[in-house]
Amino acid sequence: MAKFVVFLRAVNVGGRKLAMADARKVLEDNGFTGVESHIQTGNFLVDTSLRSIAKVEQAVGEALGKHAGYDIVAIARRPADLTGLVEAVDAVPVSLEGEQSRYVSFCAEAPTAARAAELEEWDAPGERAHVIGKDVLMEFALPFHTAKLTGPKIEKVLGVAGTARNMTVVRALAQKWGT
Image 1 (tube, rainbow, N blue to C red):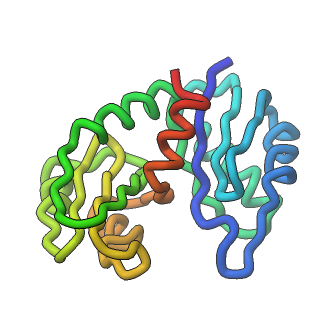
Image 2: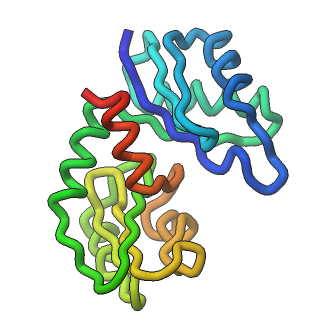
């Protein structure tokens, strides 16, 4: 069995509601074991006989989407990937002045060099992006809800982005489930 950390996109917004207890049961009913969740925003640890990240993403998205009645995007990482991501983020020097917040947008595929460069050249006051493998570190020196560097912008440049998580959550998951 292999372990994966799975992030769901926007499962509890816009009037949609997916209870994490229900989601855990649906995943268990669909062959996943050792299912754990972390907070109510769709962060799961699962054990599975599937070996491919793409197959895990597809299986989780399909099972939960069928249960919820709407499409669910699932992005998976191996636990060690989270530990490595936190280390990589910590190695990126803070590049903005003022109070900072950092988020990671988890993407389905690694961007080409040209697409990564396009995103890293993003030039809006108080916003910066750094591509780290498949993921994007977003730095903000302004309130997150006012940022222009959002999931739709990242998707426009890179393709399917799963979801963004604050680095506080990413660190907690790396400590809890990372290796």
